[in-house]
Length: 111
Image (cartoon, rainbow, N blue to C red):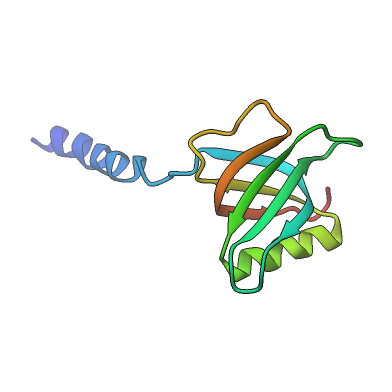
């Protein structure tokens, strides 16, 4: 019985937390290239890969003021970000690639 409980407790934790992450569009090393939206409403951000002349960009949305502030600071400071959105998947083709609503943001410091 002790062997079973030592196996079942970690398994229950893995199953309980396995489905927590719902963000399926996860991209890193992106630069903010455009922002649009009214204060207090939905803000739309376009982010492009760190290339000299990118041929596509990802579009994400948020109403979270803290995320808006962080993205604006990354834009002004020319930092890259890692961003996760709730889109079903990150599109692999097209000029505008919808990433959905932002669920996570990490602002890089040196890139």
